[in-house]
Amino acid sequence: FTSYKYCGERIHQDFPVILVDLPSLGSNDQLAPDLGMEDLADLLFGFVEQMELPKVHLMGLSLGSAIVSTFAYKYPEHTAKLIVAGILTRPRKSWRMLVDESVRVLDEGRMDEFSQAVVLYLVNYNRIKETGITSTARRLFYRQMKALNEHQRERYKINGRRLLSVEGVLGYPDCETLVTTGEFDSFTLPWENAMFARKCSNASFALIEGADHLPQLEKREQSLELFSAFLTGRPLDQV
Image 1 (cartoon, rainbow, N blue to C red):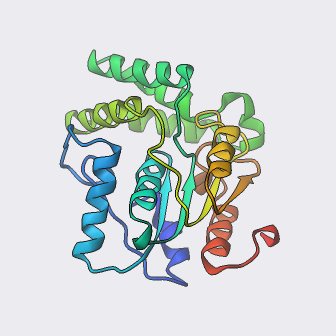
Image 2: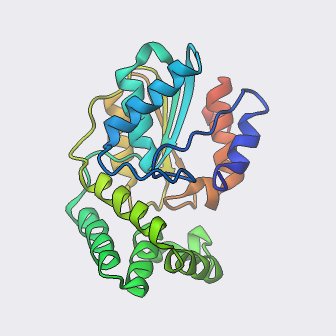
């Protein structure tokens, strides 16, 4: 909810906004280790049905992108527009090694190494100058990871294993879709996001200049303007 605060406020200028914390994500304390990505998409669909929402725009970033794109593919009649950023498709071996190692050292209680691993795979250190991610921000991120309590550590391990279980996307949605990421994203590479967009029947692909894997935090105003333009039907080339 903290990460989505500004995003929700901006989109709420044009649409009602519902923020959903699925099990073991966000502030939802339910662990649910047996639920995979497709299960979470089905659970999200159950929520949409329970709330009697006929059609929704969906936004998912990073891990959430796999959930909402699966929803859009399986339930097209309930999907209006889709925004995904840092989409997970078929994870690279090097990517799997990083996530697997972070889960392993967390299992062993090696919090210093774990915290360093998470910062290393989410921050492109070769492009710090361009992205402007400060040493203070990196230290705060490191300290936040190192301070995880036992329950939060278990949630991380569950989501790490969910990521490692991804062998490929279930299918490609047909709805109007925006695929985006930062131009220096080293976790889900720009070309991987572009390939996902190319396989969708009605997708636009946009790179956010000077951003890394978390453009909605690193280049907030540019990202929010892009999301707003897409949802309201304004030309993306004017952003």
